[in-house]
Length: 428
Image (cartoon, rainbow, N blue to C red):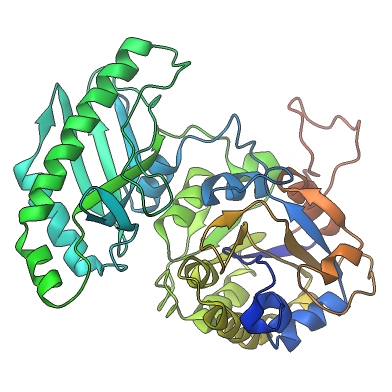
């Protein structure tokens, strides 16, 4: 039975770019280590949710790990909170937050120039000092990483059935928070949305008066004068990854969301030096730790955010350089197959360097060792069309992992009172 190293390069997929000779960053990058794995493994294309549907990172990761994002997603906000060490209780919801920049009433930067955590934390503290309770709900704003944050809303009958205020594009005003049309309790949803809108108006007033923002503007930097919220989430009660798939699992990541998904599934979070969740993250450190701890775990999940950041910032040349840097450091994993380790490499979604947005384009996926060799020599969006895996969906990945790792239970076998897809008895 094989152990697994599962690598997700965030926002990996892309579209052809004129500045790269009408190649995608994956096609343009020099990546001998990854292509070597491709030439000795099997590749294909994965639709994280379904064809043509641009996924969020929370939904894509849940699908990849075998959890239906339509019915089993507790919400991005609560997952990000959990990744930051904040457990969501009853009568509480959490939103993912972006500190952003308005000019007049129009969003001109959804990340406020990727404001540093030092300043975003100061702004959150100012907001919390000025605003606490509105219409019976308690509000707390927390900065997590750079422009990112979490908004915790607590109170009796608080409802997650409300809309986002982040339109995900610039050049338009923030959206108004509204109750969902088919909310199970319309009164609670309406009361929650009204309180949130009042809170957000007051937040904007506090941020506009902040000395932090005045100093940023004096330095020619965009002010963080509004917050955008999305992904209302509640306390997670997901079945553990170990119970569902039979893997003792660990996570190596820098970003709160990815740690949060792993924590919600009961994976151990392994904090490694230099894992920042930014483009300066220490990829060597992540791969070294993975090669070490895979002897203790059945499944090691590595998340790298940098490729997605380059895409959102519309920097294709940077994305190419990051792919090449990741490839260079992946040589650390080259000997793992001789130790009985399956390597899986993919992205959680495509992010276009042209638009800076997630797209519904499929992402290449690679299985190395424990699979048939399909003869494809390169790992990219176009080469993957000819791969032996064909086109799959996110929810197909874990059964394929079980099979390639020689852990899959034969269909129809009943060795447990609870249905399961993995073989129970094995030696690690």
